[in-house]
Image (cartoon, rainbow, N blue to C red; front, side, top):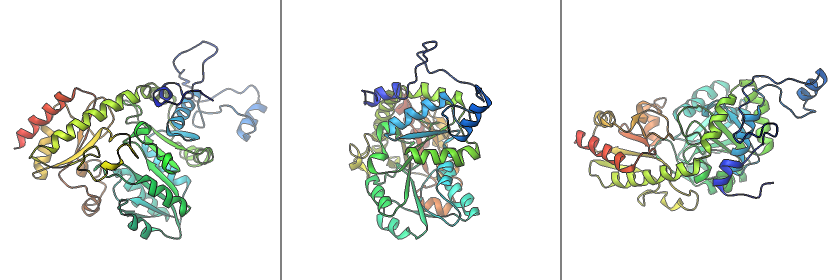
Length: 394
């Protein structure tokens, strides 16, 4: 058991497994598909689960294992499973805990591909979903059915930064024997730990802040040892949505600076949100760090800070919103987030295009909503870029 527990130390040292043979400081990259057994008997024992050890990288890899142990420590969970993508994490988690005839309660605003998985793919196999506004606790209670097994949400919500009360949701899930799953991608465990509020499983698109450099796609699932074992040995193993050792190695490298990067992301985003809120050409800003946001009271309680993503609506048309995006220079038009570079996208036509217009309206995703992921550039340069674009569409 380690003697350290500060986040900034854990991101560098949690899950360390020193290479005693060569004394490597950096985590070795075990770029291998399979592992050699000492004997046929040993191979049999490992496949039977009678002996610990590696078999095949889809089932486990030393580099991947260190990433899993580090993320479990950061989320305060017993164990973790690394996946090939963020959607791999979502799908493997939900499929391991659901079967035909089961029901899910989910937030009505989630990532577009998550929405498609819930409403289209799962529906093909007899798994039904009720989408609700999870800021309305009565709506959650009304959605509960005898066959409800899982409650799923993001907080803050992608893309309009609605924040849900994790303490209430955690208690609701426990009281009704539901498995609670929270996508914590936007805040990372540095700013929010859902387990502290009774949440069972936490997932991340590790593509985003955990890696932080825009060169990996990956996912992470954190939970109890039993839950993670179930996911690994069923859906994750059989669907094959496992991470490559090289991608795991890149995330281990990137995550060492997570705390430092998140501080800068948050500081930049706060200043940009305050700037946009004061501009008459901006109709509304969605950022929990603003006192005007309905979830501002969660800062310092549920959330350490508001994160590096914000959204806003312009005073203008759909066409003007696109013209604004096209005028930006430092903000690159791309649909990811959490990179060193600042990014901008139009949710209604990009990340949330799988929604019908009616579903987008119900989720609060308007046609002139713009989402930005604030990067690590100097904030004055970013604000200057926004000023030029706002002037162009005036």
